[in-house]
Image (cartoon, rainbow, N blue to C red):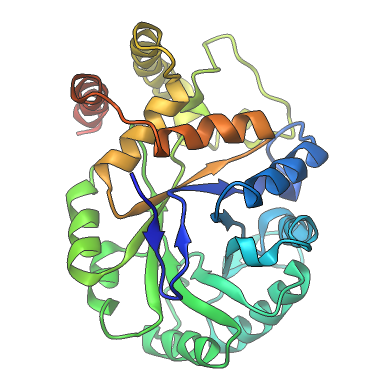
Length: 319
């Protein structure tokens, strides 16, 4: 399915390496060494986008990623985010102000042990900073060489559409997108095609739900966010309804080896959004190699249509 050309001329693979788990927080038991070995494997087998944020593990994800990439920085495309802050009580608030952007960028550069960031994303809109001031700051950071390009995450598509084309360094936009949540497909593709942006899809496996590993009997550690009932896809009746669709995917995968449930879910996003890169969280090398296979393996039109039919069941259920 090819690669994606970025503003700096670097071509990146279409499945990105998600590193939130490197933060060591809120994802249950994590083998940090296994993730770092997977990072090392990735940089030796292509140019992958490594997705992180300054708030993942309160900076630990960036630190560990920087350490893992210390001898292979030129083979990696690093995307990090700013704008999520914590007050003295640990509560989250958003800050997109130019002053904070300046401080956050320099802190991320230090943690990542690099003198530039390939893609700098505004993590969430704070709904108070004027966008022209924010983008003027981001453009200034691009011009001084600290970032190669920038983008926004979780902004409305209307705002993205209005911003695109005016700011030279604005090249990416990001939001959740997966087989269970794909209502904005046409609008996303339209923006990519007409405005020249690349879409960075996160939540492609719906926090692991679309990995096919879980059932009604599954339980999560208390240190795992999915145990607290705050993850929409793992909550009550919604979780049970989602599992019915996952079982349909599992049945489909069993009839079409060597496809797995996770690979069908990833392939669906890659096919539905041809100008996109899919961020998938990684806990080890084997998982990573399985996740990237859909970017190079063709899928039959009949099988893809069956996956689309399963996805459409979720859209009907949410109307």
